[in-house]
Amino acid sequence: MIIQTGERNSAKRANENQPNGGMGISPEDKKQIGMNEKPIYKVCVWCNTYNQTSYIKDTMDGFCMQQTSFPFACHIMDDASTDGEPEVIKQYLNDHFDTEWTKETDDYHLTVARHQENKNCYFAVYLLKYNHYSIKKRRLKYYREVTDETDYVALCDGDDYWTDAHKLQKQADALDANPQVTLVYTNFQTIDGEGNPISRPFIKDFPGRSHSGDNLPTLLRYGNYIMVLSCMYRYKVFESEYRTNSPVRMDFDNTMCAALMGDFIWLPEQTGCYRILESGMIQTGRRKGDDWGYDIYRYYAGLVMKRRCKPQSFRQRMEATTLILIWALKRKDVQFRKEVLNDRFLAWLVLPVAYVNVKVERLKDRLIKKR
Image 1 (cartoon, rainbow, N blue to C red):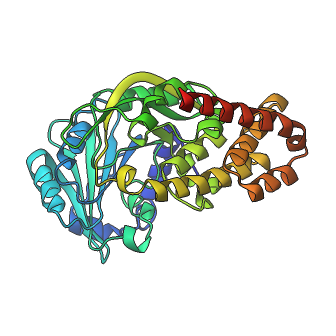
Image 2: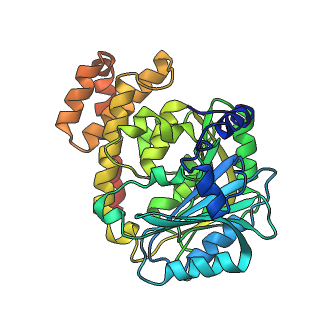
């Protein structure tokens, strides 16, 4: 259940009357660890990091620079790094934060702290005791230790960083003013490991595809073109059954889920830097990432075909069906094409249109290669 800001105040007061204060921690434990009254965070930032000791300080600086009218919590989860990154994070906390409370479990050590100058900025640092990614252990439940309810979620990995001090405020204001919107995203700068601006063919077209309104057709046409460091989502996206049942949890999964649930807002200003590393997935794991993206696309396209998404007009259904068929034909996915045709009679009507589109695109590609 997603509770709006005013409702969460009431929920918080109700939770305070419960034996565990609504946090899974008894009053005795709260007193023992020195936990102060729990703030109500309008925005939570989720930051997963592993062996990014050279870049994590830039990421944390980008968090701390945010100027907001509301408290926000930055969840930094180090997945048992071996390059000294936990020590860098702990030193950063010691230098800039006052510790509110700590907790130790078999899985992690948690420190919740408040920035010494930016009083709206809180860090919740999870130092995991063993690598969760390698054993596919999910970590989302850990975030609820600190923020069991929030309005919005922003994401930023430990090698990327924000450059706009008002990023969170602008995106939260946009979501507040537009209840039909599930995601606000912005432009960004692409950099290398040394911080130098670079360009990549698969990224340079992203701004041209970005727009406000219904982004579902554009995602069905091109796949993912939205970088996670630029995004702010409604929290309900991460709680939806669409995402719960998704075969793969990746950035594209979050974006497709948000597109099925509502509209997007595009802010053209650059708010952060996306770092491309030679050791990152973009360089070393593109094939695996492409396979994951393929699975995500098929899953969400299937939901669209079954009309398990936001309301669509007849024209919108026709457009979505055509785009999904084009995607299946271009990849020669016979099985998925059959599934699409079986799911919706409309697919048979637009199948000739999809075939023509694919033929035209292939002809254009041949002409370009001959030049």
